[in-house]
Image (cartoon, rainbow, N blue to C red; front, side, top):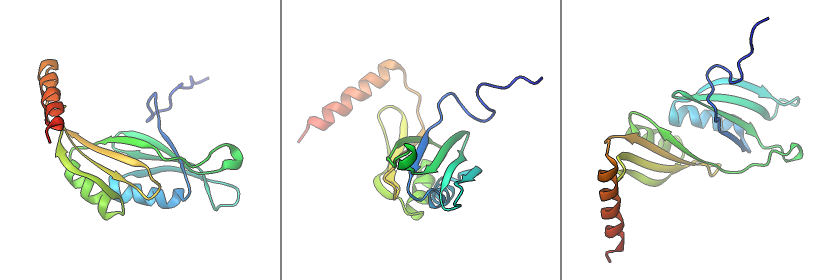
Length: 153
């Protein structure tokens, strides 16, 4: 008898799950905005809703389903952090796919270049690309300079 893996291939210890109204449309958005690949789609018995889907973005999986309050799955927005090798390009694709820009790409004091967008389901996506490794000391100095710049009128 084969041994069953506790964590299935392709998944990690933590896998985000998003419950929304319009999961099929959201899968299309994720494909266009972030290059997601749909792995599995399980419709409900009516065929009108998605009970479960799994999409891969880069090397990570995301579960996505239509809200079903009657089954304890209400819709609720999420905040997700998405790393890529081209944050500027990803930001442009996300906005072109219909996401609202919250912050254009900019370099951050901790060594990431990042942007933020919100999709039509109110999920906020922090898009990031690590561009600079910092020591603890360098990061503390950069943080102190950032905080000081925020206090100036």
